[in-house]
Amino acid sequence: MRLLVLLLIMGLGDVSIGQHYSQFQWLSYLRNRWRYVGWRAMDVDCPLECDCPPTYPTAMYCHSRNLQHVPYVPSHIKYVYLQRNQITGIQDGVFDNATNLVWIVLFHNQLNSDKIGKNVFSKLRNLDLLFLDHNELTHVPSNLPKSITNLQLGHNKISKIPSNSFEGMANLTFLQLQANFIEDVGGVFKGLKSLTLLDMRENRLRKIPESLPERLQQLYLEFNNIEGVPEGFLTMRPKLQFVRLAHNKLTDKGLPANVFNISTLVELDLSFNKLEKIPTVSRNLENLYLQANKIKDFSLGSFCSTIDMTNFSKLRMLRLGCLH
Ligand SMILES: *[C@@H]1O[C@H](CO)[C@@H](O)[C@H](O)[C@H]1NC(C)=O
Ligand SMILES: *[C@@H]1O[C@H](CO)[C@@H](O)[C@H](O)[C@H]1NC(C)=O
Ligand SMILES: *[C@@H]1O[C@H](CO)[C@@H](O)[C@H](O)[C@H]1NC(C)=O
Ligand SMILES: *[C@@H]1O[C@H](CO)[C@@H](O)[C@H](O)[C@H]1NC(C)=O
Image (cartoon, rainbow, N blue to C red; front, side, top):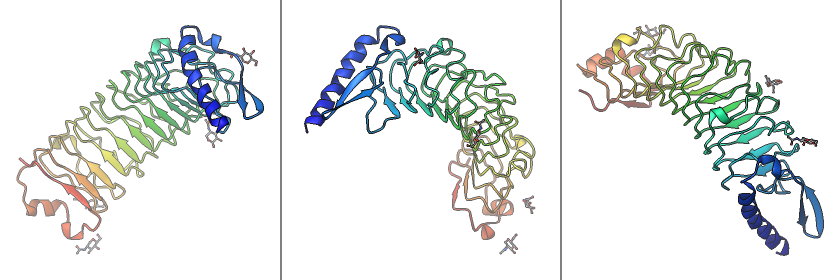
């Protein structure tokens, strides 16, 4: 009980001290802190504005405390939580001693691309997860470590992605770029051998990104301006199981015959587009969404000539509402 009260008091103390020191440069936080655990004193290298609980010796919690700078990260820390603060920039060097970092969580801050040093992340050879979503970034940070497997950049103001942004990131598995201002990506995803999920919802794409990796399983492209799908798009990506293209500008003309007639596809969302015909799909498809299109001349006959209902054992969900 005494220990608990002591820890609580220290926890409260941290908050006010943190706010006071946030006026100064991050280097001023650099200091050792003595933390008393029962009758035993333990030297815990932890910045004043954060918590480094002895029970999780490699984690540093600095979230939701009005921080304006990234505090000094001691070298033994692997997981740093900095979300929900008011951090606008990160200077080169902040993470240089923390080469063991595996996770950096920075979502819901005010990060501005012009205030992020070019080499902030470059020395973090063990970095696995980097969450930078819900910030004010206008471009993808440069020199990202090649070890990253999970990169979240959604809900920023990114409009352009330099062609070398993800170069060599052979282990990148999840890439989230949703809710940005991206119009074109060129061949930026080429070489992402491990990418299985790409989320580019709510952008300004006019076509499906080129050179999507072969391993891709889930592709989310809802709420863009895509008018068509390239010939053989799915034949070249046999692992692609979930394709979501709702709320785009797809027309029958933009869909080559049989482009979705691929046995590996499990879910296809084509709702809220301008299709007049029901595209041919494989009988392995489980979920097909077609509502809110302009599908005309709908009759069971025309439908069954395209989709063999009697033999459609796997289709579990078919939405066709709002027919005109
Ligand atoms: C990194 O660690 C060294 C040695 O412990 C120390 O002198 C230096 O100030 C640290 N650098 C930063 C940026 O914290
Ligand atoms: C990718 O992961 C493997 C296995 O964990 C590792 O050996 C390799 O170094 C990683 N590649 C990069 C570029 O970090
Ligand atoms: C769909 O693909 C299957 C398998 O490749 C093929 O047998 C079938 O004829 C195709 N459907 C149409 C309508 O072309
Ligand atoms: C269902 O499709 C299979 C494979 O294409 C075929 O062999 C079978 O005859 C079809 N059954 C019916 C009832 O159409």
